[in-house]
Length: 242
Image (cartoon, rainbow, N blue to C red; front, side, top):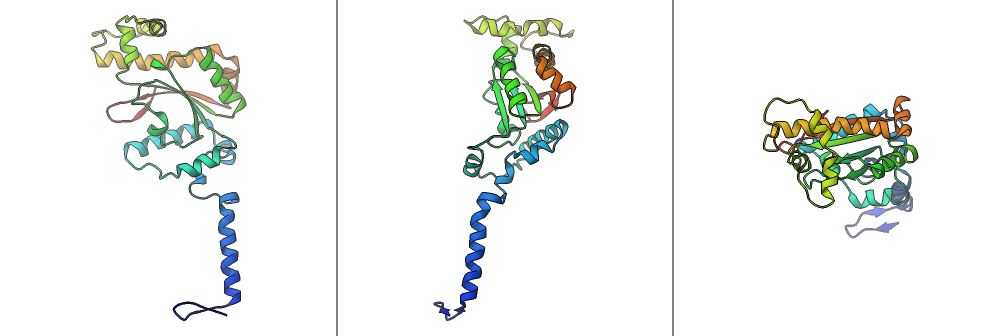
């Protein structure tokens, strides 16, 4: 037997037991999910959920954000977990606005979702291709188009702003502006009108995704994925369905 500094005795059997427990603990990082590991979207968690359930998890994450009850994350562990393989559950199309980082707003971790960002969350062939990659090859079950209030790109389009290549980008929104029914002040100074155009643009983008990608449209028709739209409120931080 071995004697501790305080006079206690540790038998050989006890030492072996302690060693075995330590060995099991060491294996936890390899085969047993820890709290941090469980935060990542592993196949068994993503694949067992329906697209609607994944959307609900995203919205629940936003609720945690707005109530300041976000998950405590071990970012380095998430980094190691996802380095060999990724299992993202969703593909997001959002605006480049610096106040709309979707991973933060929805309490997401490393590897949880693909994110494409462009002014005004507009769509083009490159983004459509990225969405097809996300859903067809990587297994994402949700495409979420996220607009936001007080969008500068929408305001610029309403004002017919011109600035280099940005002029062509803003032109993508003009059909939505023209088709938005509103009897009040149709200027960029009217927040109600700006936000209505932004929400309508989300809907128009979703329609264009379905029109532009037969692959995505067919997968959605079969129930494998769901395309959904949301608006983010810069004032109170909440996501709302569009």
